Image (tube, rainbow, N blue to C red; front, top):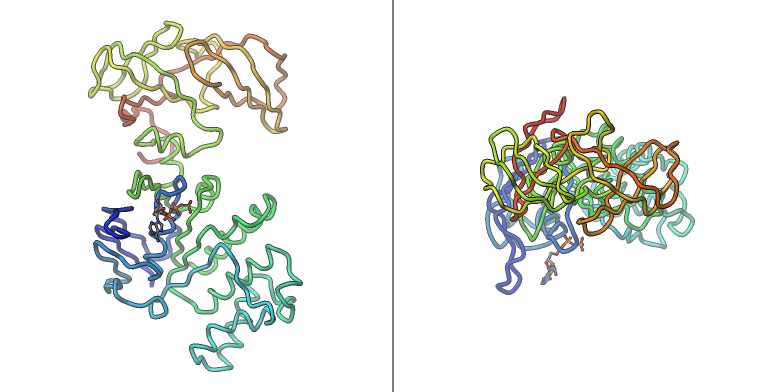
Length: 371
Ligand SMILES: Nc1ncnc2c1ncn2[C@@H]1O[C@H](COP(=O)(O)OP(=O)(O)OP(=O)(O)O)[C@@H](O)[C@H]1O
């Protein structure tokens, strides 16, 4: 079992509060990713779960038992760190067995667990090698193996892939997903990489300033962000934002004036807004529409076209909008430098945020994705 409950968890260092009011239940077998900008408190929260940091507020329970005061080695929790910290003079097998030896585990049991972990992580052929004779990805797999042999109920990963190059990261990401599938253990994973969060998580916990900004399935956060900050953090390229003025707020549609003067009825409940309010319109790079579906238009000029093969990202200048807007286009689209482009908008594909950054509830539904 590995059901973790955090109730009102908070952390202060010398009276300075860095996180608070963390309420979260992580189900047995769930893969949860803590994500958020640097300094938002992800690692601190993970270290509190591991028992490496004192919990200064609230209660933490594992399978119903309070663990606040339980030392790390007595928690049924294993942690994989960003730095592999393997013992250089020991073989892969010895590195993996080390923790079990310290815990005086029976020798035959150690052999069984090391062999099983090695097989799961495709390390069987490498068991007699020393860390210096391994690649970065192989070393990271040994570090995971060291935790795997302890057979913990909960696995914690603290940015385990950040020392690897881009191709290896993708490879290891897939291997970690496979491992979760095969073990069915609870896994909590910290990263500042939203692609890792989107691809690995059953649920994402997006932290901001030491508090939970939003918890949900990756696609829920993508399509139904509760704040502008969440909308900007999830998704690559970043969501486009445009300053707008509210003309007519309403329960199903809110009409806004766009830069350039056209109006657009956005499919959101804007009943908390008033006519004349300033707000932010959010449009994902793939959410611009062609004629005849366009309900409003923005004249734009091409700045740069990034041709990525399977897609082209057009960076566009629009009068009245700071910075470039990005439109995702088919990879075969050919664009001339500086060519004028018309961006089409449709109200059901847009987001609207009030001046404080709170999202107006979208009235649009996305099949299979809950709000
Ligand atoms: N020992 C400490 N004493 C005082 N403040 C600390 C201590 N450790 C962390 N902090 C502060 O707590 C905040 C959260 O740090 P934490 O490392 O949890 O953030 P993070 O989201 O994991 O960031 P990153 O992605 O950069 O690793 C930061 O403002 C940090 O400066």
